[in-house]
Image 1 (cartoon, rainbow, N blue to C red):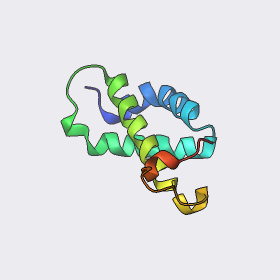
Image 2: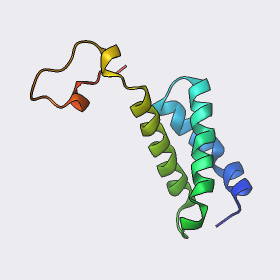
Image 3: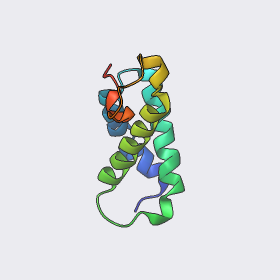
Image 4: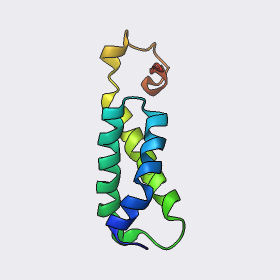
Length: 94
C-alpha cells in the first residue's frame, strides 16, 4: 500500500465527491474528508493489500454515518415515538 500522503493525493478528490453526494454542505464534507483520513491513519496497520479506493470510501461512509448519528436528536425532531416503534425508525430525512 502507498504511504498515507500518496493515498490522500490519489483519493481525496474521489472521497470528497462521494461525501458531497451524501452531505451537500461543502464545509461539512471537508470536515468529513479530514476525519476520513484521520481514521485511515489510525487504521493504517490493519489495511491489507487490495483495492485502496474501496477501503478509503468504506471508511468515509462510516465517518459519514457516525456524523449523522451524532446530529440525530429525537427531541429536535418532534414528539416522542409511539410505544412499540424503535426510536431509530423515527428519524426524518432532510
